[in-house]
Image (cartoon, helix red, strand yellow):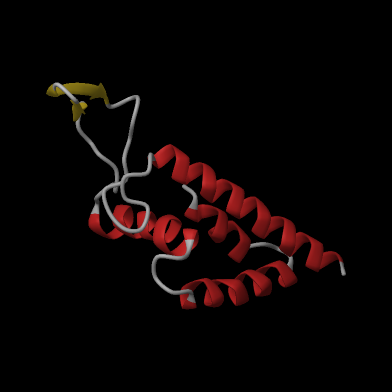
Length: 120
């Protein structure tokens, strides 16, 4: 879903918005792997879902968590509704909802910048 924001910008009726989005997407694609929320999360998740039919988060019912203290270790289950870790890439281990929150903030900034430029 986060990738569809870019699709909407690319289809904007405002020619400047379309051109600015297309210019930026080239910049985002050129960023080094592991440094870009667009490349390493937004676009990667879209590619996984559309082309691989795979979602990049844990899909089980519960996660087993090893808890170690000074007296030993035990396992406990964490309900999958509590924690949805991303399974790969630079955001591996991060809760998918937190990554999505970062992506939403990133898109808000991009849209604000494009909007400001279109008013100049």
